[in-house]
Amino acid sequence: MKERIFISPAKYVQGRNSIQEIGTHLQGFGNRAVLIADETVWKIAGNKVARYMQEANMDTTNVVFNGESSTTEIDRIVQQSQQADASIVIGIGGGKTLDTAKAVADQVNAYTVIIPTTASTDAPTSALSVVYSEEGIFESYRFYQKNPDLVLVDSNIIASAPPRFLASGIADALATWVEVRSVRQFGGNTMAGGQPTLAAQAIAQKCEEVLFEYGELAYQSAQRKVVSPALENVIEANTLLSGLGFESGGLGAAHAIHNGFTALEGEIHHLTHGEKVAFGTLVQLTMEEHPKEELERYMKLYDSLGLPITLEDIKLKDATDEDILKVAQAATTDGETIHQAFTITAEEVADAIQATDQYAKAFRAKV
Image (cartoon, rainbow, N blue to C red; front, side, top):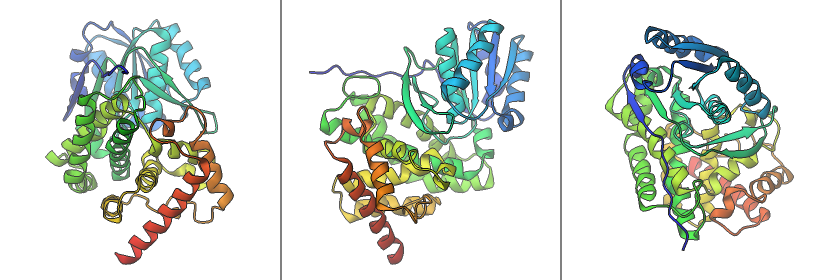
């Protein structure tokens, strides 16, 4: 039998104004840090983090992230980190910034600190990065020996972000149990290697439970930019529960189909990771032959959060059959996560995409 493997960050901290205590949480990590954030995030949170660290007598080198978690960008920041002789690499921002920070910290053998400014993906807790080309096309997963040493989530910052990002994170997290369940049933491997542990399965299932119970309330809290108990629950589900669940439980078709969408050009590249995963989750449910009621349960929640459920919603209204097949072919390439949960051809995936679009149109018409 395969081994069961569970991995996780060393420490997870979430709460109001949590970045103010960053100096306390970094004790023992050294006193030289590289801070990575894009231009927008420097104004939102980066400068505050730098100030709190300086108040704790820590030296910082501030780096502006250029927007793509590519090999070129990773190598550029590795060089700056080496020049700074940093013992800590801190990523502040969204998924691509955080993935870049993890890659840099791994290469320079530094402590990894992750400070997400949105609850839009489950990237913060994981020991992997998604690497894209300079043009934003998915290239590979990059795996590391350890998870981040600290994940620091400031609920006030999350509440201040556009609600669309929270909804995107809910969509990404809703894929967790769907994919973990399929990996378990098919006997596939997790992102950590081996089979899903009981702990990972329980966490993934709890993640879905929290999102269906509190997702709409959390989204409404984000619309008012206030921190509520519902928002705190969903931040944790999007970030910690989904992060632990997907990594130690496994990815399946939903994320493979997301990766397939990156093979197309056009407006679809303006969608968030979670928005594309939302449609991929519906396609996986279609492939698994779930009844209409189960599909519509997801569609109803997605619709309430402004998430896409049709090809038109993901800017593919005019996609040809050849375009959809191209997506399916990319989703079924060797090594893709779909193979951890299915034995399936590109043609079957393409048909499932088309069928899902039709199911969603019928749901919209009925509603």
